[in-house]
Image (cartoon, rainbow, N blue to C red; front, side, top):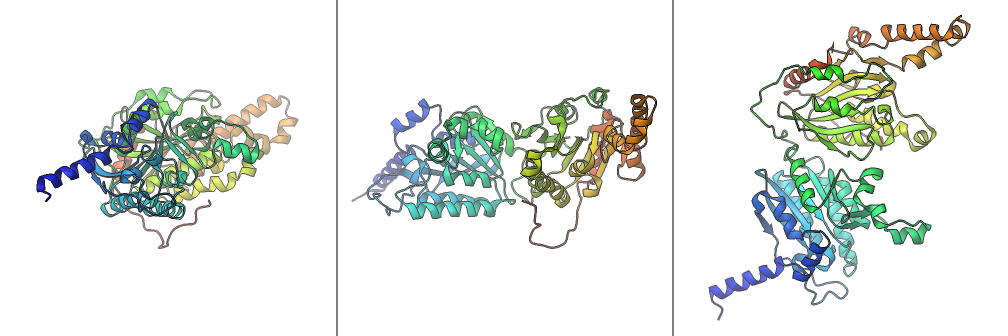
Length: 517
């Protein structure tokens, strides 16, 4: 007859076995490849390494080809809840040591259950992906399981933040779950993400490429933009996740966490007066303006490897979280191309969904010209920016730093797209096009007939800049609230942000707008 003590010992032994996943030897193999185990990742994710595991004793359904008698602890996935900076977060961590972390019926069920719990409780959801993919022994159940995961990713979208960590293979249909989430963090060397691997591509097209070149962290971060952050190792990926969550609210009914006592720093920043070159054609690093405007060490750039001609970042101003979109003149002179349009549009829509005010810094000569851009759909992609800013109802503040030309100026959160406050630096040039281009069009014949065409053209350019391309005509028309010295930027933004913290905006009732995808 079993005693209570024996039953307790039996439970402890069973859980201890499950906690070892596929066994010590396979965990050691993970370590030899520079990877943490699934459980070690969960422990390092949460405060003080404490978490509560749910569905520990779940096993596979027993159905499927050759599944009888197979031992897959937890069905290859750990589901847990715990605190990150004192806030509740639900997570799953795929266990590659247990049948390669393959996705079967119960594996997918646990995945979805944790998403449902995150949705019900209004908390962030994190998935740590390290899986060989679909469990071919359970073909129909695996396929259906992936579909349910994608469906729940969509249910959570815009309600609670979703973060995916790619710490191992994530190939084929499995890659679509991270793609449906808000942020993707991938580990160098060990993380891989692609729909079709190198061997499939070689057989289908004859192209030869390595797995790292095709689906590695830097490739996915630089070329496709699928990855938002590149991590050096598992520990770094978990640190990035914790840092990212510190800028985000737990759900769409809350505001992001603030730091400090709310004191507003209205001091001027003289160095900002020195960062713009005298020559309007000379590039400079916009990041230096941002660093000297926002709270020290508070800027977290998103997708830094992708579309570097536009900066998207979280930052803090007087301890309050804001989203920043800024043109980067040292990359393609800050022009907007297809990738920059997609990157900024997605970021703006995320900020709007989670009550994060948006501040834009404008220095844009236009949309990038070229046949490749036109045939690639720059009109449609650029329209995403117009749509995203226009649909955005959080506080929107714009600072025109230098060039602000044509439709690209509008796409960077102009007053006509609903910006709440707009200020310009004295160096701002707001016009349909640059002075050189405008004069060449307007006075082509006069320049040809002039005694000294070069001098005459230069005089016309100077006059055009003074009369039309400076910030003052826009200020005169009310399209710019004020022209401020650069050193006053932090002060200006601080007061604007404080005055807009209770902003409400009524919009027509509808299911959703039809963004030009």
